[in-house]
Amino acid sequence: MTAISGLSALRDHVRSSWRILLKEITAFGLIGLISLAIDLSLYNLLAPHGWLKAKGVSTVVATVFAYFGNRHLSFSHRARTSIGRETSFFFAINMVALAFAELVLALFAYPLNQRDDHLVMNVVNLVTIGIGTIFRFWSYKRFVFQHPDRVHSPDVDLDEELAE
View 1 (tube, rainbow, N blue to C red):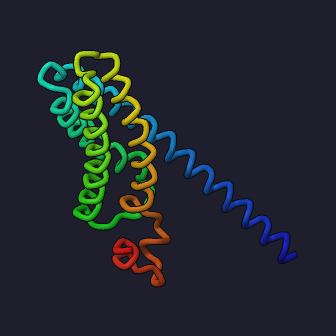
View 2 (cartoon, rainbow, N blue to C red):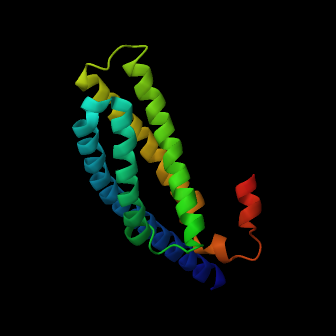
């Protein structure tokens, strides 16, 4: 009887974990699509002022929207640490993704001399957004919006883990 109840508990855990992951991915995707629309619109609107300036502004505006959307929708069920910690990590992660995008865009705009080709610059922008999205989803779950067990467990020292 104990093995049956153990299997039942495991099945329930997997089922609830899968539902939570599906909710996170779906909400993250919805927020991401809206952020993408903001990013691409501003990027193309500001492109005449320079691709790199346009990318910086479009990313900052999309990131502010994404923070509130992810905090209140995608990862609303996760444990809360201090708002200062959350926002610091969130924006630091996004600045890493922005730095990567800016470097790749600069490579295409200057050494490869593609800055006059709007199609190339938009494709490069989309590719960097795609790579950045994968990085951000993993990073948000790992560092920003943590699992309640990791925040409240007496065996987990978050400061020590983050220093590693």
